[in-house]
View 1 (cartoon, rainbow, N blue to C red):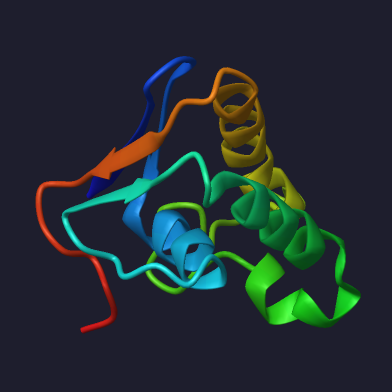
View 2 (tube, one colour; view 1 turned 180 degrees about the vertical axis):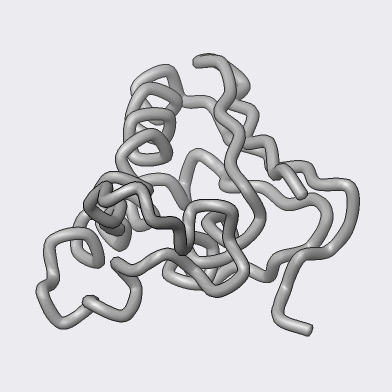
Amino acid sequence: MLVKFISSTSGQIMMFSPVARQLLEILGKDCDARGVFTTEQLPDAIRRLRQASATPDNQAQASPPAGSEAEGGDSGEPPVGLGQRAFPMIELFERTLADEGYVLWEAPGSFGER
């Protein structure tokens, strides 16, 4: 399932639900079909994502989420780290914050742990 993050001022990004769930859990948000980051919430969200991305203790979070399309495979490619997964969202949040906007997310349904 794809989750779309839409900025009121700066475009949008999409990601698979396991990655979106991982990032939203860091941010303390429920993985409902729809949600919002208000202008007031964006600075804390940016700080949390940067902190989680920089913390070496988050090795479990840096590995692909279970069941994600990015996991497994014999391609020999290095795994995608949490910082790489969070970077597009951090950029979207920073640009939106600069223009005093908000970010919505949409998915076909709730995508929390089952």
